[in-house]
Length: 232
Length: 232
Image 1: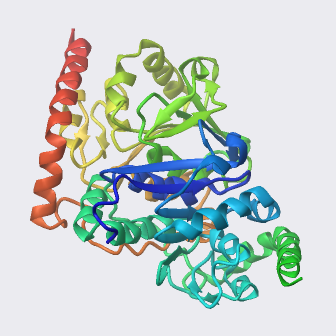
Image 2: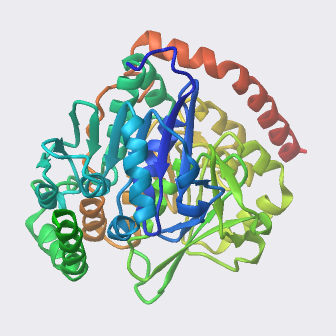
């Protein structure tokens, strides 16, 4: 639990073009129900952000956000663009320094890694991208929500909801998390059991992997360039 | 399955001020991965919509959306405001008429009810509001996702994700739903078991109910006014 005298708590969610919206809208819905907490959604230059056909406006200017208690970095196809932006990455490093918890959902952990924040730390990521974590000195973990000290990371996209409840129980307590869980009726009943590569029917996994292949090759080579720049 | 010759499929999500964002951002993320499908997010006059601290811009003008295959109405604290808007409700009735599926998440079913679309139909809603469905001639159902003919309704907020997979399997097939489920890593692991009133610790349920009481009294009296106007 964070010192109860530190109120309002400030959670900062830094967006970028091509973020996966559910990576942050899931946690945001849960965080928005917290008492004495401000949730700041920001982008470089306060530019509106497009994500999967939705447009998020009214954002804060990331460079102007002075500090936060919790930094929460979402993932998405645009994560390599975020890594390529010095202004974005400088803000991530600066805000992480003063934060009680540094967190991410999905491939947001690759952004934390590229910012040099995961060296020697266990972290989660989207199942198809988890193998990239060691390139940043992180230890890939298959957990849906992984905590290593003050680093809390969630797996792919929908893991952000389980992640949010875990973060809330760390910031406040289990009681607060359970009250919000009840209010948002989070008692999942997936009609299919295909949400993890180990459980999906083989044919589904093959087809999804095949369809991802083209875009993954591009993004892996972009990631390699980021890693090489870090090493130089 | 909808006739495969009807492509692109058009899913319309009509927003209003005070919608609960996860009610539609959850399903939207899943729908956005569908092949040959356009997901149109609209509001009266294309006005930006504020929801729990997020601002959704770049919306379509609801009154100008000619038709849809799937109408998907989200819920939220603002649902009684939506019911009070003739322009919003006229669009709901008009779009529902031509739709293959009329659907909702959370208290979106109360909006469908107020539009006269649920008479004699089984429907889900948020657990705290389910008892209001009979006022609109609907049959309240405790299911997380409820299908009655071409009406598919989800329970509170996070039920929208289970709902989306069900809708996708109706529109396409189980295979398409499972591929999207794997891509979005939907294999939920809630850290607590408090997401339904029957399962939450008694003390949590009491406290949540107590905190909801004030706002619920207001909204129930607003609902009563809508119902009375429908009867007259």
